Amino acid sequence: MSNSFTRKSSSQHSCDEAVGSELLHGITLTRLEDIPIENALHEKEIFEKGEDLRRLNSERCPGPVVVSGEIRARRIIEVYRRCFEDADQNTRLRVVSDFIAHFPQLAFDADWLRTLLRVPVLCPPVGDNSREVVFGAVANGFRRAARGNKEPAIQRSYRISGTRTAARNLQDELSMWNDSLDRHHSTPEELAARAAEKADEIAKQYRKLGQRAKQRLTRLLEDGKCYKAAILIAARLFGVRERDLQTSTK
Image (cartoon, rainbow, N blue to C red; front, side, top):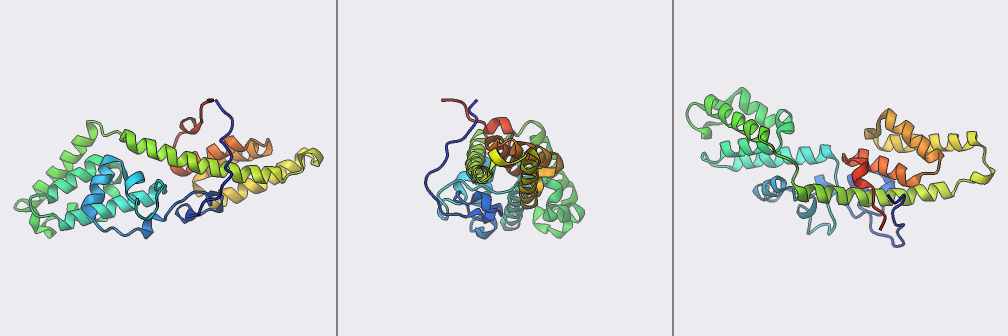
């Protein structure tokens, strides 16, 4: 395994508000919440195919859309809510079933679905026997999910690709920080203090790191292992396994 990414020599425009950190200033990103939902049905199809990281924002940002899991989840819930409200009587239940089949982990986070389950008669377009047919659609969705609804390969590919881009930029920034240290004339205690200070700074920006990851990060920074530190941060930020981000020696 290679122990470093290729250092970048060119500067790119930053859209790093999507993750809220100056450490990612080299990545071209756009805040997902700033992109209007112009066609909910089209977005629904994109999410179900797992192509949202590539196709959702093609006009506003040429690169992959890299966002946090929380932001993406809120977007998905809102897209399906709009699809449900815009659907006719014959397709509303299909929207419910599709939502649960593709995103069962979000089923109980969707206010619109919880409301429908509590008082299905509030949505008369579902037809007669509202409670029975609504719960039937929910059950069908969970059955489809149970049969296996793995992350599409294309979505996984774009997610890993985008996260590697983030890791490369993180490594660049951490390497600059590391180069600023006078390691030859610093005591181990001084280096440990600087590493702890930097880890604290990063942990405040990225709450997803957690205490254990922060401790690992501190040790890596203390040892000057910027590549591994960048991998650790990026993996925690975007929910990717560290081993999936490591590049093979060419």
